[in-house]
Length: 126
Image 1: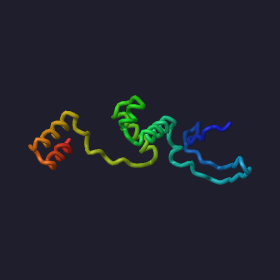
Image 2: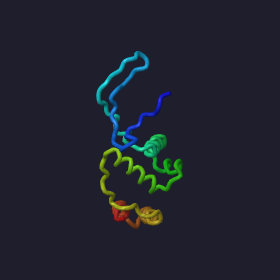
Image 3: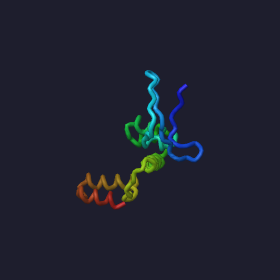
Image 4: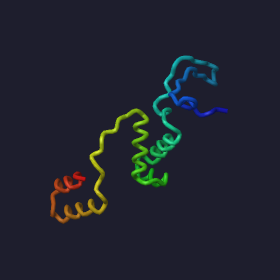
């Protein structure tokens, strides 16, 4: 039986390294210190999220539907995974305007009451 590879020590939670590789076909063994890669730093829940994210082609709305989570929760989980992989996340400029507000701005644009630049500025102000 082959067990899944774990990336964290079950005792102290430190990152594990691989010290021996083995080929079942030719019975070759290689010893040394091998890195598991960044994805083995993730929890099983985070890996499941990433698998779902990839299956949904990175479309957060589809991830939301498949996992039965709210859009803000999906974004939060994605940001959590990004941080867990060791990447920094730039500060967000603010929450997007509510749907009604966006629609009102787009309506004014369509009616010619404001320019495209004015609409963009209004949408970015939030």
